[in-house]
Length: 235
Image 1: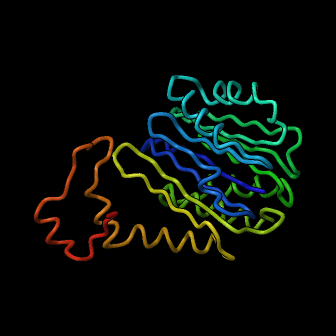
Image 2 (image 1 turned 30 degrees about the vertical axis):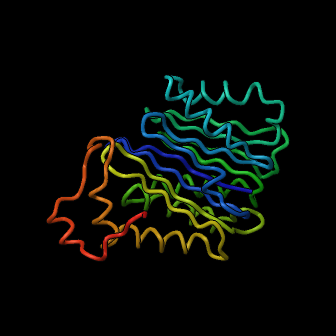
């Protein structure tokens, strides 16, 4: 039904996740993240958004990814129909795949990155996604997009794709959370949306909003004059 990837950049500390599925709204269902906790991807036949949030709570309280996954999945009597991946702030990874998950279903991991999927054409989708991320160059977001594209080319969700999402977090940046909730070409549309989100004027405006390292940041009069009427707002 879904394949996802979670990763941490060792140099910048940035956390990034991406996911694609043959159903609607993969970003809202699957990806969760907090700078101070890490990332989670909760998916499957009956995905639990509660799992995703609980995993972040555990890691924020000091649990490793492996400890968090075990604590969240063990008490759930419906866990056979669910899948979970986690990445902690140190780059540790862990995954759980329920016994009733639709094949092909599994996970793959390397240093500071984990890929998880179910209802795939084959496990080669996971291998291709992981290998593409590890060998890719560019920003975290660009590497994640390349990874999803490689997974699609290797066979993808057995139903094809309908939605895709990207989430990047860091202490010195505003969150980058992009979602294509329904499309016949979600990865192409997600890549196009990323290009817009990192181009002017939106990219200029995004550098003026608060971050964890600059929680009180606000635009100066000069900033406002420079951006002018092109400045996006959330009013």
